[in-house]
Length: 327
Ligand code: UT7
Image 1 (cartoon, rainbow, N blue to C red):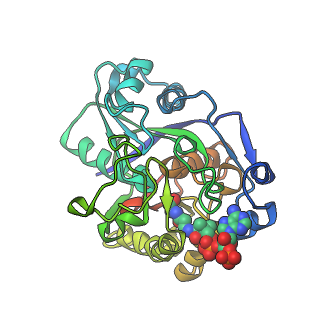
Image 2: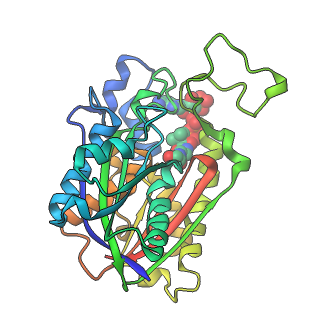
């Protein structure tokens, strides 16, 4: 059993931070950011909460699908930047969309979240959970990025994208994985530790030397992981499906760094023009990056019905995963 993406939607904050804007508070420049990452500008949530962006994207997806929100049986919100420890962002999206018959939960698989959610949605559709599932990835990384850390703050953007999915006999093959041995390479501690409290060796969890309540990334370690994980995730999703890289019309990878995508393109033997790239204008929006790229490619008429897509995520955890899907 596969799944059909009935429709997608997005919400992108109006406020943008261009590369040169960072010069106001860190020692950087447009040339470094563009050549090392491929990023030119990124949307920044101003007052918009994570749930608000997610609800807007979800409402657009529901409208475009032309469905009654009461027919949604499950809402999966993917986020690492929930507004609340509880309730879930998905519960607030339910309130805002009127999907009153749905179950709702959040999923935290960092930048692989949308792929994890597709994999999860397919399993729920198979065992039965109503006609449609709403998947919404919504992220406001700017809330906990350290704007004094020039190696991380220039990378991230904010935004949300959603998809309505249903059961179908179309092609679908997915693979999800994680390597917790690298959990401390990309992290942000939750608010349950006050800044003055030192987590001492009795509780040494590998995160003790990391800044509190800010996003920390060991860029080099995550980079090494990412260039291996991207092809591995594709191969995992393709295994047993009879699909090879040549069969794929569009690769839609997590948008972290164009150099990671270039390396994967060489490893997979796939030309760069088969990769959808949006990181130049969105930056890295964590789990929203794949559905934002998918939604934009559909809006621009690049991705068309019947085409085969490979969605590939990798990120904190360290999680990774791929979904091969016919649009
Ligand atoms: O979404 C989750 C997945 N995340 C990723 O996939 C991110 C993976 N990592 C990366 O994309 C890259 O490692 C970064 C973009 C984060 C960093 O690129 P890099 O080529 O690994 O740079 P680096 O950290 O090795 O830094 C090289 C130099 C350093 O200066 P020195 O020590 O050589 O003098 C940095 O201090 O560049 C300097 N630098 C900067 N210079 C200007 C670091 N950040 C900046 C900056 N502007 N913003």
